[in-house]
Length: 125
Image (cartoon, rainbow, N blue to C red; front, side, top):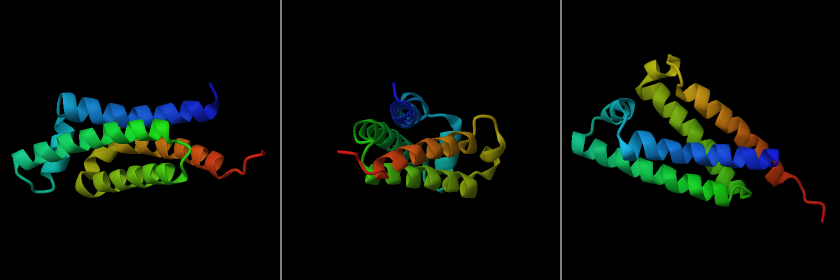
C-alpha cells in the first residue's frame, strides 16, 4: 500500500470513527459538553450531535473515494482546523487532556497536506 493510500484511509476512517462511536452509537460526555456549551436545549444538542455523526460518516466515505480531489482535501483541512478552533473557543480545557483534538487534528492535517501535494503534482502522462 502506498503512503498516499495509507494517508487516505487514516484520514477517512478517522472521520468515520469519530462520527460513529462518540456521536451515533453512544454520545460521549465530551460531545454533550461541547454542544451544551452552545446554549441549545438537550433535545437540540442531541439532534446536532447525531447529525454531526452522520455528516462525519458521510464525509469519511467521500474522502476515501474522492481523496484525489483538491477540493475534498481542502475541505478536510478546513474542517479539521475549524473543529480545533471550535474546541479551543468553547472547551479549551479539552486541549490539554489525553487524546485531545490537538493530537488528532494536527496529524490528520499533516496527512492531508501530503495528499494535497500529490493532487497538485503534475502527472507525467
